[in-house]
Image (tube, rainbow, N blue to C red):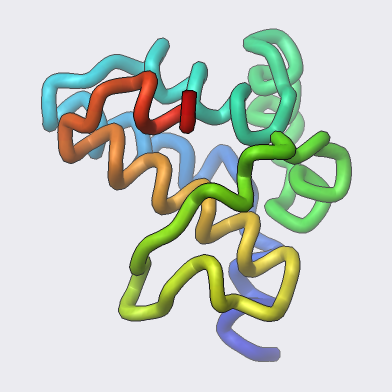
Length: 116
Protein backbone atom coordinates (compact mmCIF):
# COMPACT_ATOMS: atom_id res chain seq x y z
CA UNK A 1 0.00 0.00 0.00
CA UNK A 2 1.39 3.39 -0.98
CA UNK A 3 1.78 6.23 1.48
CA UNK A 4 -1.12 8.14 -0.10
CA UNK A 5 -3.37 5.06 -0.03
CA UNK A 6 -2.78 4.93 3.73
CA UNK A 7 -3.72 8.62 3.96
CA UNK A 8 -6.93 7.96 1.95
CA UNK A 9 -7.94 5.37 4.56
CA UNK A 10 -7.18 7.61 7.56
CA UNK A 11 -10.19 9.08 9.31
CA UNK A 12 -10.75 12.80 8.97
CA UNK A 13 -11.29 12.93 12.75
CA UNK A 14 -7.77 11.58 13.41
CA UNK A 15 -6.25 14.51 11.49
CA UNK A 16 -8.86 17.13 12.43
CA UNK A 17 -7.64 17.18 16.05
CA UNK A 18 -4.17 18.11 14.76
CA UNK A 19 -5.65 20.84 12.54
CA UNK A 20 -7.46 22.28 15.57
CA UNK A 21 -4.28 22.19 17.68
CA UNK A 22 -2.27 23.83 14.90
CA UNK A 23 -4.64 26.74 14.30
CA UNK A 24 -5.38 27.34 18.00
CA UNK A 25 -1.66 27.37 18.81
CA UNK A 26 -1.37 30.22 16.30
CA UNK A 27 -4.27 32.20 17.79
CA UNK A 28 -7.00 31.12 15.37
CA UNK A 29 -10.23 29.36 16.34
CA UNK A 30 -11.90 26.01 15.71
CA UNK A 31 -14.83 28.01 14.28
CA UNK A 32 -12.51 29.58 11.69
CA UNK A 33 -11.13 26.13 10.84
CA UNK A 34 -14.65 24.76 10.43
CA UNK A 35 -15.53 27.72 8.20
CA UNK A 36 -12.53 26.93 5.98
CA UNK A 37 -13.54 23.26 5.78
CA UNK A 38 -17.13 24.25 4.93
CA UNK A 39 -15.90 26.60 2.19
CA UNK A 40 -13.82 23.82 0.62
CA UNK A 41 -16.21 20.87 1.03
CA UNK A 42 -19.70 22.31 1.39
CA UNK A 43 -20.17 20.49 4.72
CA UNK A 44 -21.87 22.68 7.34
CA UNK A 45 -21.16 22.26 11.06
CA UNK A 46 -23.69 19.42 11.47
CA UNK A 47 -22.40 17.50 8.43
CA UNK A 48 -18.77 17.97 9.49
CA UNK A 49 -19.58 16.78 13.02
CA UNK A 50 -21.39 13.73 11.59
CA UNK A 51 -18.33 12.83 9.48
CA UNK A 52 -16.02 13.27 12.49
CA UNK A 53 -18.30 11.19 14.74
CA UNK A 54 -18.72 8.47 12.10
CA UNK A 55 -15.00 8.13 11.48
CA UNK A 56 -15.30 8.91 7.77
CA UNK A 57 -12.11 8.28 5.79
CA UNK A 58 -10.58 11.02 3.65
CA UNK A 59 -11.54 8.97 0.59
CA UNK A 60 -15.24 8.92 1.57
CA UNK A 61 -15.17 12.47 2.95
CA UNK A 62 -14.06 13.98 -0.35
CA UNK A 63 -16.24 11.58 -2.38
CA UNK A 64 -19.26 13.11 -0.61
CA UNK A 65 -17.98 16.70 -0.65
CA UNK A 66 -19.08 19.32 -3.15
CA UNK A 67 -15.74 20.97 -3.77
CA UNK A 68 -15.90 24.76 -3.97
CA UNK A 69 -15.62 25.89 -7.61
CA UNK A 70 -12.88 28.31 -6.50
CA UNK A 71 -10.74 25.50 -5.04
CA UNK A 72 -8.60 25.67 -8.18
CA UNK A 73 -7.46 29.12 -6.96
CA UNK A 74 -5.60 27.39 -4.11
CA UNK A 75 -1.94 27.43 -5.08
CA UNK A 76 1.37 27.05 -3.34
CA UNK A 77 3.55 24.39 -1.81
CA UNK A 78 2.62 21.72 0.75
CA UNK A 79 5.25 19.15 1.72
CA UNK A 80 7.49 20.39 -1.09
CA UNK A 81 4.86 19.84 -3.80
CA UNK A 82 2.89 22.54 -5.65
CA UNK A 83 -0.79 21.75 -5.00
CA UNK A 84 -1.87 23.05 -8.40
CA UNK A 85 0.42 20.50 -10.11
CA UNK A 86 -0.87 17.37 -8.32
CA UNK A 87 -2.39 14.96 -10.87
CA UNK A 88 -4.22 12.57 -8.51
CA UNK A 89 -7.58 14.27 -7.72
CA UNK A 90 -8.02 12.91 -4.17
CA UNK A 91 -4.44 13.74 -3.21
CA UNK A 92 -4.97 17.25 -4.57
CA UNK A 93 -8.15 17.74 -2.51
CA UNK A 94 -6.39 16.60 0.67
CA UNK A 95 -3.50 18.96 -0.07
CA UNK A 96 -5.95 21.81 -0.75
CA UNK A 97 -7.26 21.27 2.79
CA UNK A 98 -3.71 21.15 4.19
CA UNK A 99 -2.84 24.38 2.37
CA UNK A 100 -5.90 26.20 3.69
CA UNK A 101 -5.14 25.06 7.25
CA UNK A 102 -1.53 26.25 6.83
CA UNK A 103 -2.69 29.66 5.58
CA UNK A 104 -5.14 30.02 8.47
CA UNK A 105 -2.45 29.06 10.99
CA UNK A 106 0.00 31.53 9.45
CA UNK A 107 -2.42 34.36 10.17
CA UNK A 108 -3.65 35.04 6.65
CA UNK A 109 -6.95 36.98 6.75
CA UNK A 110 -9.94 34.63 6.50
CA UNK A 111 -11.20 36.44 3.37
CA UNK A 112 -7.93 35.64 1.60
CA UNK A 113 -7.94 32.01 2.83
CA UNK A 114 -11.46 31.67 1.40
CA UNK A 115 -10.35 33.23 -1.88
CA UNK A 116 -12.95 36.01 -1.69
